Length: 297
Image (cartoon, rainbow, N blue to C red; front, side):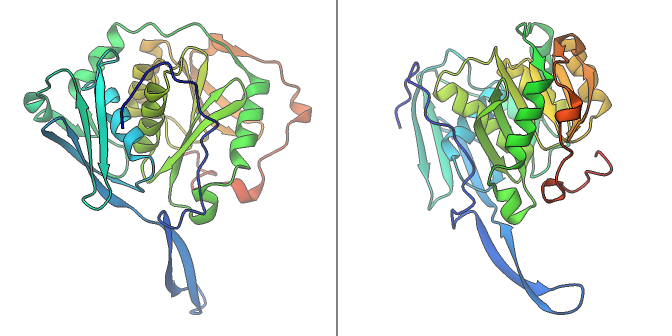
């Protein structure tokens, strides 16, 4: 696949819960001892190579592997924004994706420094990513509460793998209150990396965008969002202390526990514009509540 910048953006990308590769029925028993069949997501290993070097093996649902590969490399600072990517090759049988660039790359030393993060499904981050926060200036932007409520309502009612099978995270790139790219995976870090790859592939400007995630607002999510140049990060889940500290350091607006009428802003409050009459906002429907909603984890 040859990669060219400045291509028109495609239509909105949404989860495809009907894709038979992404879920399967598993038999078991329910709480009464009766036989049941439960639809569950299917995770597969995907090994990523950058040119001739093996970088990482990720557990993923295996949709959009090219976007996942590009986004992972971008967010790990292995692929630079001005790099020329000559090809992304995916072999589904071998469960391998190879990103090739004009620039010669060698990350042997950097790979030795990787550390396990709090992200589920074997997420990894590298210590020198923190250096990216020191010289980052996020663009000025605003988050109108009317956009926030429109965005969360639309996302909650969009057909998704979560509503079909659960046990999965979603990340959504939005402009104002409108989702434009919705990705899901077993780990929130995979979902956001897919969005990063999609933005790079289609030369999408980050300055006026909002990133929404169903997962916790951790240090990893903060770093990835800042690296992508997105000024606002929203979650239906809660915060970690380091995630908040890094967001304040980078000037990132961090909105958590966004469910129904409620939300909390712990960083970048100056971007919030309270323009929505709460009398016209509905509480979240029980069908769309996720695990841990009552505990704001």
